[in-house]
Each structure stands twice: as C-alpha cells, then as structure tokens.
Image (cartoon, rainbow, N blue to C red; front, side, top):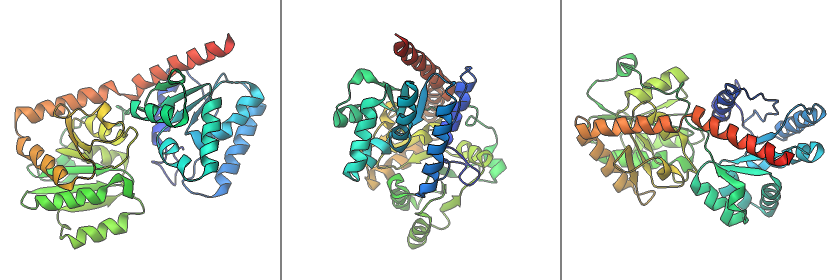
Length: 351
C-alpha cells in the first residue's frame, strides 16, 4: 500500500511513517503496490520491483507492510540475499484474509514463521496473531504507525473558514465508506438526536456512498447529515478542528488511526469498544467507549452526553487529554521505536 495520484489516501500512513523514519537518517529502496484494485498487473509490477531490488542489494533489512501478499512475496528477496525480513501486520491480513481460503491461510502461516521479526499495530492484534498462528510472543513487537502531528494539529477559527455555525453541535466521521466502518450505525444513532441542533459530516468515499445517501434520505436527515465525499488534506484538518466530537462506529479495528487524528486536533472521540481502540481511547478521560459494539441506543446516548457537557470544564478536560494522548502516539515517536527495533534485528542477524 502506498499513495498514488489516483488514490492519495491509499496507504497514506505507510508514506507518513517512511517520512518520519527518513528524518532519522534511514534510507529506503522501495518496491510498491500502488493501485487499489484486484488486478494481477499490480502484483506483477511489485514482483518485478522486488527482482530489481534483489539485483542491487545495497540495504540492510527488508521492511514489508502487510503479511500477505507483500511480506509473502518479499520472502524471495530474503532468501536470495539472506537479509532479515520485518513484516507489519495491520489487521485485515490477520483477521480477515487468512480465513477466506486455505491458500491464504497457509501462505500467511508460512510467512509469519519465516519472518525474522513481526510488528503488530496493537496489543489486541499481537494476541490474536500469536494465538491463531502459534507465533512466539518474543517474535512480535507492538508498534503502530502513529498519528502525523505535522498534518493533524489544533487550528483556530476552523468553523469560520468552513462557514459553520459557532454554536451548532458538530460531529465528524472520516474514512472509507464500507460496511465494517459502521457509518450506517452512526446515521441510525443520530436519527435519535433530531431534537438537537447538530450536523454530522461523513467524510470519505467508498462503495457504500449511494446506500448511505439513500439511508439519509429515508430517515429524513438530509439537512442534518452531510456526505462530503473526499476532501483535501487542508479541508480535512479544518473539519476535525471544527468538530465538537469525532465518532468512530467501526465494528472491527485492529488499531484505528482515525480517532487519533481527530484527537491530535484536540477533538474528543467516541468509538465502539473493539480491537485496539481501547489501548488509547480511555472512557471518560479523552473520549468515550461504547459497548457492546453495534449498540445504536448506547451510541446515541453517549453522543447526547457529550453535547450536554460541551460548555463545561469536563469537556475542556476531554479535549486536553485527547491532545495529550495523540502526542504520545505521534508518528515520529513511533518511528524512533521502529528504528530501535531495526537495529536489534540487524544486530541479531550479524551474530
């Protein structure tokens, strides 16, 4: 995964981590899967790039994002050059893809067993990976890609720049419009808030766009819920700053970077208690967790609660703690942890 002109958000976290690692003096020779499609051509191009890297072995370590297919295909370079391979498991490559068929399962297992080291983006994912594939815990580090605090940060007068009401309760959600992200649940939840003066902005694109548009119309929420489509990074920053609340209604998240991006702007978040989200979102401290996942009534009540306290010291505390948490998970701090891990793996290989 890596951003391209056609898909600027595709693997943007990989690009941001690379940028942070580069500032630490780490240089990259890259083989990239750029296109967000199922076409075989993108994998053939990736294999060709790996082959070219193998001919010019001027690097110390192979660093692959996603177990299958990226790390699986990178085993070729590892075996040819006897270089250590570190693979990052992001979630779907452990929780979804291996269970589609036996080929994916055994390819994933084969790769995990032969990696020199594995990175899981959350403690939740590490536990899942070790348990389901019988991987020793000492072989797995927990490091996430972090939130890029040079792209997400507090901005003054965001509402004025977006021509939004200074008093209206603003809710924001960002991300791909796909079923697992749960935007349909958020629409159902805010339907129960019709008495409130609010607006919900659903920012992003995806295959659920038309279905969500129809749902908004069916629930008579066209004045309250706005599907913005993709927006520029500059406008996204403004929306996250203008929001009183960020809501992540996902039913599956191995880590979930989007709430942290909002928190980096000083905006508290609400999310269902799933996956790795509770590792940074602390109920009543920097936001709220809703359980059980998918409970629309409970989600609506938590949103109401935030609206009721947004002019109180308690809400100010939520904002301050959200910002503090995001800074603890900055991409640059995570890059330092990655760098230290790389050094350890290379050192072990040399022994």
